Image (cartoon, rainbow, N blue to C red; front, side):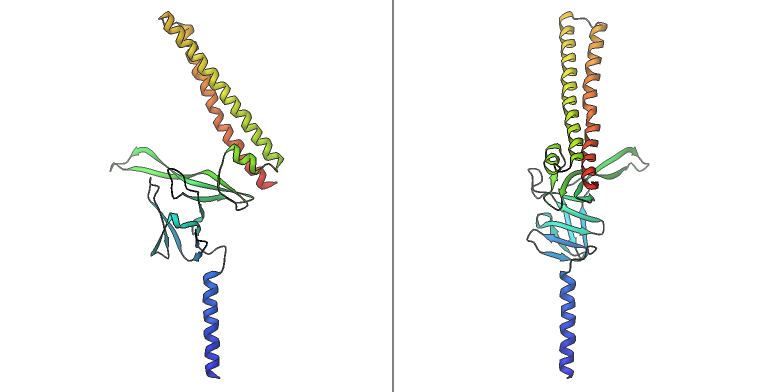
Length: 235
């Protein structure tokens, strides 16, 4: 009887341990490997500043290479790895910064202030910039007009924002070409007359302003992409 009771306790403890390792608790940290295996435990990302090198530490002692990892959940949030590319053969870890029908993933961008302190050091800061998205947990894709048009085509409001984005694209191209043409004509006139007259000066300034207006549409284009994604997540 005593032996049976001890066996029962052993089986229960073992079962609890196995379940503890394989359960999928949404708040528990884990690493999902490219092999498909998921291991649960304290997970950290070690990333050198201004470097693409990334190390993933498991339980503060075991290191995994980026090439081995598919995705992971840390105390700081959920991360997924991008597909390999020419300059990033092992991919890059991106943090999920928005969640919904369309999840947004962002990469680190470092910047610095130009004000050195009395010791000569420079202060650095980091921010996230949204570069990729995933539709309902699918593949990671770049945030651009082509990919969004293909994946958000079942939402009319999103499509309207993307059409406005394309209109701004044509506007940018048109203003850029017009500005370049004005500058070219003014420069050609200057070369012919060999004198920097007021009309040539006005022409050059006008060309630069028109070209600059064209490039400024980038600010509005990015807003249209964000609104397209927001509409898809809220409708």
